Image (cartoon, one colour):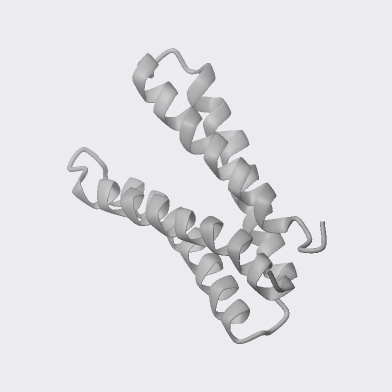
Length: 123
């Protein structure tokens, strides 16, 4: 397998995961009638950030432009977000076991795919 194909096979699963995860989050936020306008905008700002970074990485990768810095930004943003938000969910007694379980799985899948995405193809 060529280095570009190997890199693509490592980066694209992370990008696809990011799109699926955050676009489904957008749907949940928009359909949550309990959220205020401010709460909705705050949550959607995270969605926009994740999706925008993923689009930038994907477009740059497809066009064979330098991608690593943008990919690292997405990886760091993803891991940082989940460490703070995921940790908060796990430590907060307000959330049910099922909610904590689902978000732990989302967090771990993100960590694994992010790690896979930044591994150099020659390894």
